[in-house]
Length: 333
Image (cartoon, rainbow, N blue to C red; front, side):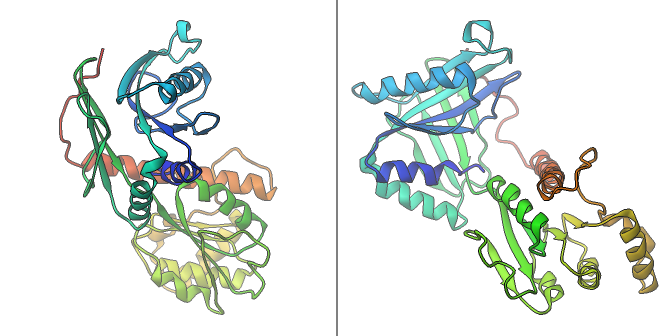
């Protein structure tokens, strides 16, 4: 998520620790992380990653030197990912270092709360500034580094990048799938009809719903939802399929089961008036090809990968259609 570092930053500041915010400001060629990736470096701890390896090791060392230096202003530094750095990516990464004082906790708490409540922030910083400027309404901002080694400008969009996933059924595969998807930015709604379905499960940050009629919940999902049906009952699975087919605005519609289950459901759906061309909207069996294990964790891994592929493809299509602030970016040499 674009804003996954905000919670970690607030935790470190609340503990009284000054932190260096390390951001991938730009890349050229092959690089271990994308522009906007973030790491937090304290005197004796780190959180998140900018790609690991010697690049990260050197970045941590540089950040900790800044923590002990006087009057460290924001700085952009170029790293060539070649043999001299002990990495074989072959590209170039520009890292932005900015010190964050523990005394600024209240400001960062407000920014975290705003983003978690759906706000989109714009970060702007240039070589003359002592700190980043944070403003609301950054919906059309892009992460971009412009300029030369002495005179540069950086902008970044900070927002929670969540995508809606509605999972019907709380069995072993569903539990493993929730574990896979939650750290990846999925906004999960988890629905079951059994009274004890969620007993003993970790459900923090998840919208759990117990209802005798799970199919009635389908209409409440937002447009672009990833629907995943894996209940304990074939009868309920079919009712849920009918409910999802009443919509035409979902991002994904997956049903756990075999080819024979799919064939059986297709015959019944056609008998009930479903247009034949809509059958291809259903994914069954679910999950990327090549993973044949029936272990719940393996199935969840295959399904999670399939969902993430589709989500990223949709993101790329959206970005391609979005107007750009500039058609070219000059990276620092």
